[in-house]
Length: 614
View: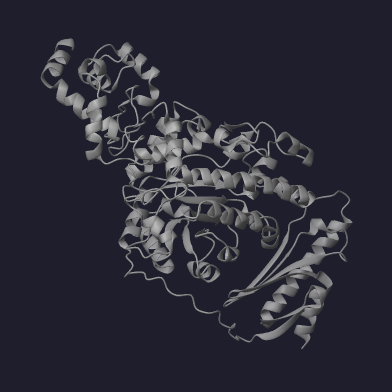
């Protein structure tokens, strides 16, 4: 082994070292990991973005170490590792080296030639490099990525095909992700820029036509920065060391954390990822919405339902608004710093949007979301903003500063276009479809893209990837999106709202609060169905009043849809003591027009009786 090593070095050491060192310095990575400890950022001084390979080649010569120094590096450098793997040596020595350098290993592929771990350690002055770059950019947009299809679509510009990425595209369904997580825990990965960048890049290596990466992090890093330590509980998910059980617990929180310091690792990871991908595609930054973060903080971590959070919202409305306003202000600073680190598109995930009625969401959540978009754009006019109100209504976002609005799979493309005609839409394939055959995935994906239309559209899922997804499912999704061009799927203009077709409909007058009224074209069957639903609600409420032991009763929901008209009625019976106190929340929507109002149960019953008797 030693003789062979000396022969290799004597014949080709100079050329080999030149080649390897240049590849390290320019981040032109192959399947191996080259991590010399004296790596310095060649591009950091002259420009905040990566220089071209030609420009770097001259700088590389000045900093290239000697052949001897590269091969004798005490930590086991790139060339040393490469040769050790080729010529053998002590197994114990190799195991000892690998244990000391777990993030710099050369690991065989586990699937279809995809290397498990290509982690590259950033230079020691990564943060200083990032901060210098941000100062040079002066809050302006970073140089355009080579593939800017996503950014064009977000701005509403024409593209050749729909850009695409997948929520949770870097995750547990990837074998290479699982392999890397064997050597570290989840939150350590989030806080380690080298590992976060590596996981962010993994999907791009496997699915080469992806149009974006989303930084590998977690929405709960904000509560952690506020003083709520969090850990990952096996088979259950994230869990805080304490929960916000009463308003008194708000005193435990730091409502004004030092965002650049406490969350600097996220900004470092975004910056390093951008360097490692050579600005090929944009890096998406993100955070959780105030309501979603509040839900986790009140529940104490991941739960199957957010009952305690909803109860907290109703019991302590003013304190809820105070907490969400504090989160809102932190989020603004957090997203601005992400933009300054190289993320041109910033996404707010409101995963818990559908947990509350539309009226409650509009009262407690929408104002903060609109403020975030407006304030981030005020501070960084070139930033692109996206929001995903999962399983909720999206019409409110059309009158906001968000550029992109995500839709769940529960919303049809036609309905989404009607609700947000001025925005770029994103979504909304049912993630469970990715378990189907490639043919079925492609057929339904192509249909989705054609229904949305290519312009002002970003293809995505209706929620995130699942841990048990096969890696072939996303491949079929990408292939299908790639096949549909603008000529195949022009985005249809949104027609003006049409009056509801008659279908036997007659006008029913609903008497609202404060003397207002609303005339709705309602069919006999629709009114009868609503009357029957209200009668069942009354019977249930009587049982509630007569019950010896208090219990929680299900919320009442009724919906009637005809053409572009919909009538929805909602009530939480647990909020009222007697049947005479009960008020229903009514929502009437016709195209772009929406009317909402509280209406006493007795008044709604009277209006229905008058309509049916006529």
